[in-house]
Length: 354
Image (tube, rainbow, N blue to C red; front, side, top):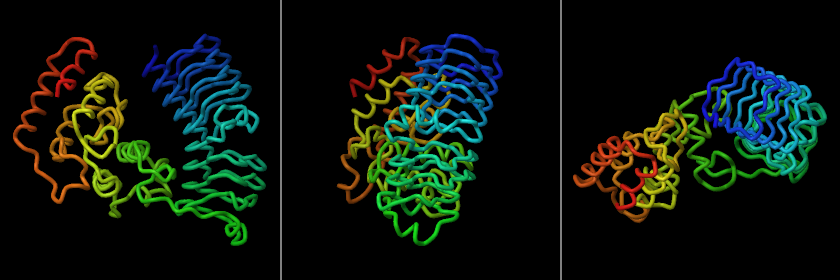
């Protein structure tokens, strides 16, 4: 298990990494040429400037991996998952892209292909929601039947009535006739991934943007993330998303509309409370203040919000203040959990009895 391993600039050429777990590993500028990494899990791995020439990545999981400026000549991506992966200024080819499981399934959501010459590439029927295609020549690229919501394109001319775009799609150059041929579908406020539902994926993406404040994540989509319509994308936007758009409470881990003991069971069973892995937590595993980790601070945020065992937020005429019992509860939880030296499984017993 190489989860979170620091392997930047390592010489791993010709090594065997088949089926290895390299989730969130640091592999920037590493030499992975001629390596067997078939079936390996590179989810959220940082692989910018890595040498992947002739690397076997068959059936590898590259979801949300950063492959910025990687060398991919001869790499085998057959059956690989690449949703949300960053291929900025890499030398990925159309044949490599088409061989992936994600392309075959029509799911290229969130992929970044900016700076790549894609003249005549076939994106027919692909879901490209939130894809980054900035700076990519796209003359005669086929977008018929594609979903290009939240996408910024340099130019596009092969479209039809089944090509979908929304209010966040930006066309740098398009004729009025081509735009008129497409179907406009407006996304709800707070729907960050344009699937018409406000769900955990949306709040996770918003928190990631708040935490990183990266231009690559904001860019032309700043107004979409800035749901509070002020000068910044920050925790004020998170609060508005939770309270005013989703109509729920901080602490509602499963977004079922209420914050109760079942949410505490969920987050403690995930086992990420004050662990040693940085930025590994999500809304569903206890990160409620957008810092990427589940700590006592998140419990403070949730209980101070006043929704514990209050039922759905929309059903209340006034938001209750946290009472002394809940304040005491959160203090005890922090103290007891820190005091437990045993395995993570033992930690869940505390919340199970709430």
